[in-house]
Image (cartoon, rainbow, N blue to C red):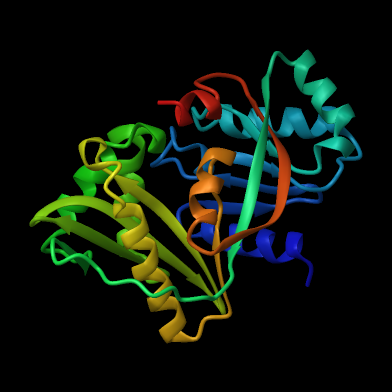
Length: 262
């Protein structure tokens, strides 16, 4: 299995945890009417070249508008999708290109002693609200309107394990592991703004790497939202396996770049 196939399989499994999926000849339609503003839960996922781009666009627009959800496309292999992108433009879709780095852990555990001021614990019913408040405060995650509902659904799903970091007793950072077979993906790494710059993200990463190593999981992946975050993860043993240039086409709402910039 090549990198693209492995990453696609892991990504589809991840999306399946919070969205319903319809398989098509050109990819998938994901939707969750309870999370209408969550882009990852509501988009047409294009990874094959459609034979009839206009028909695909009409199908997707009808599907989402019938559910009062903004139609949008995530487009892979965009160098092969010029006809689809041209048609989307004629339908007044906004379009942006995104560089999507994919990184894999080199499986090395570096000597590291955690500060006595830091405690990392699994998210349970007892500390759920503290973790929720941190994730809802992160603008890059879409805020409470999006992340609040999504975090609640993830917490209930057995494939996710969320962790909470305390600094001097105060809850200030979170991260989670999503497991699928012998693959695991690190997600939702977040720190309250006032606690940034203290190396807390690194503490979480070291902790999660040790968890993965102990469970003898084959690969640990991270999908950074941009090249700046990619450089951060590279400090902790994550190597860039590939960079995909993907497209996001949408009829309304903010672009992904706007959301990431907060």
